[in-house]
Length: 359
Image (tube, rainbow, N blue to C red; front, side, top):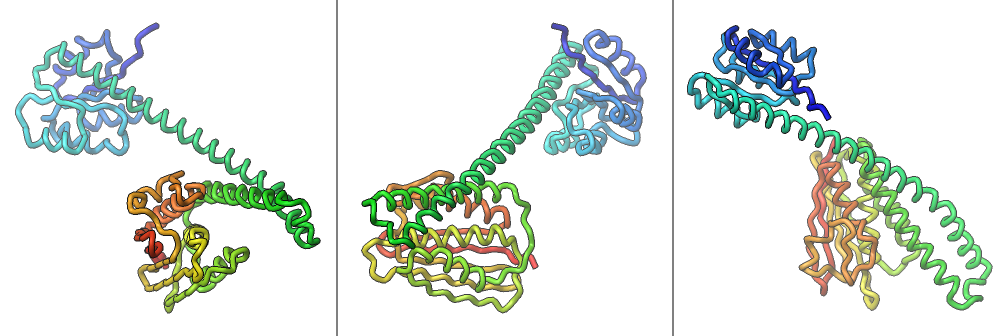
C-alpha cells in the first residue's frame, strides 16, 4: 500500500529558503511554495493543503498574522511557524489562540522538520477522521430518531382503537363482566400510551426549531388541568396567574414542560392523602415568566434530587418512564430557561422554572 500524498505549503519571503526546503523534502511531500502571504493564500484557495509552514519575519504580513487571518476560512491545515529569532510574545500569542501546531527555529534541522511535518499530518488526519465520524454519528442518530418516531406514531393507531373498545365496553356496562381482564387491558394500554407519548415528545423536542408564539398562560394551564384531571377528580388545583403583559415563547416546548410537571404532580400524590393539592403560580413580566408548581405528594428523596433530570432515572418510589423530567430539562435548555427543585418526603415537591420572554 502506497503512502498517502502529503501536500505542504511553505511561505517565506526569502527565495533561497524556499529552494532549500523544496530540495530537501521534494521526495517525501508534494511541495508548494509562496514568496508572500498573499501568494500563499492563492494556493490555499485552489489546493487542498494538509500542512502549512510560514516564516514569522515577512514584510507586510508576519507568519502569526497570516495564520490568524486564515483560521476561519481554512481551519483544517495544520500550521507550523518558522522563526529565525526569538519573539516570545508573538509565539505565545499564536499558541494561546490556537493558530499554530508548533514552531521551529531557523535554520531548521531536516530530521526535526520532517518529524514535525509527519506529526502535523497525523494531526490533520485525526481532525478529519473525527469530523467524518461525527457526521456519520449525527446521520445515524437522525435515522434512529426518525425510526423511533415512525414506530411510535404507528403504534398509537391500534392502541387508540384498543382504548376506544374499552370505553365502549364501559358504556355497555360490560367492564366487570370478565373479572379483572378488562381492567388489566386498560391499565396496560394506558401505560403503553404514556410511554409512546413520552417518546414522541422526546423526538419532537430534539428536532423542532423553537418557534415564537403568543402564550396565554391562563388558557394553557386551564386546558392542561382539564386534560390531566379527566380520569382523576381527587386533586384540587389552586391557580394564580399574573399576566398583565404579552408573553412570546415556544408554544410546543412550554406546553410539554407544563404538561409533564402537572402530570407528575397528580401521579405522585399520596394514596392516603384526603386533600390532594397542587398549587400553580405564574408571574409574567416583560423579561420572563416565573413559574412555581407545588404539590403535597410523595416528595423526592434528597439523594435523588440531582438525578431526577437524568434520562431514564427512576426511583423505587416513582415508577414512570424516566423521561418526563429529562424532557422538561431539555425543553428548557432549548429555550434558555432554568429549573430548580426542592422537596421533602413529608411535605411534597416544588418546581420553580424561569422562561425568557421573547417578545
